[in-house]
Length: 279
Length: 241
Image 1 (cartoon, rainbow over the protein chains, first blue to last red):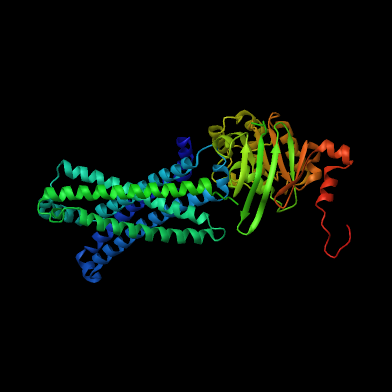
Image 2 (cartoon, rainbow over the protein chains, first blue to last red):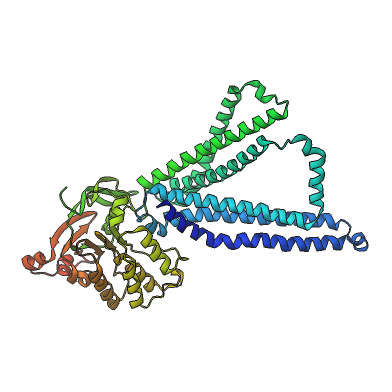
């Protein structure tokens, strides 16, 4: 049943996102060409003298445009995640979803998995669009990175198996982090649903409340970890130790996000199972 | 097991400080068309939503075919809500697909046939349909299932008399005769002719449960007359109507 539910959730989410995923890199591509053209234009010595610092202004404009595009993509993703849960389960559409012969956890997990997938794709599309914009607008960025790699990074980073394991762990941390952020919003909305009136306000208050609790727990855990770990852990003096410490930190973050996901899921599922009130 | 389809014992439900159900008791058998009759705010919708699991009772026992509201009861209940529950982007055919995927008792052929008879294009999106057509689609979905229990919340409220006749005949011609149909309404005279049994609900309690034939024979009244008698309120300023 979970697969069937996901089929419908994916269908409803992809309708809005697929055009955006196609549009974002296309816009970046067009933008990069026009920026490249403008840069070349300003590189004309006569015009350059007339325009003065035109090039750097263009770079700033480009940066701002890129930031705006990424923020837009993120805001839309977040709004959509919230709206699909709120309208899809807690408003009229919930009448349909909660009368289907499926378990409540399946409804929640289906929403969470599709939202995580959509968010991750949006992030990848955002990064990809940014790369197109950066790389194609001007060759300077590629040159700068090549210079940085050759002169600094290649000495610092050893690309061995542990490096790739860490890259993989980092990707898992990002995915789990995205899922736990989504579940955080779900748990807040489920708690808001318990309010007799002003459910939206209740959800916002719950969101802040949960954030405070999470940060307190995080601080306590960090303090405990600090005392538990041997002192050598904090005196990194070799690349191998740095890699090992990175792996451990990434594993720790994965564990923390997984715990958040489980707790938020249980809160959401229990409330919607035991206290559902679609008035 | 008593063989009852619906059993409610001492069911309570509050919305904040407002009491919607106050110790409601009810037993209902299979194979009947039952009217859930009561004035506005008497608890009709609350009872229906508790039976299908959209609301949870604060207290009491609710059993449908011997089970508490859950996956099993949802698989045997066909529910017509009092307002449309569709996502606007869905096509009529998407909804049929969804019902086919989740309900084993959904008869796709019947649904397609009813759609054709009503000249509804299955490729249209729900948001483009008129209010009346949306209600028809909802009725098609609900009545294309061979359910054990049909919960119809105000199916004829807000439509003209000709449409009422159409809705009632659709229900009569398509329900599963082994199942029970529970119709909530306050438009008694329209539904009276199709009912086997009536439940009068007031202030969150079932105050009368009787067979329609008994009312006619023993009391010599129609259900509509009895309803007006039971729920009569003195008009503002006093006097009789």
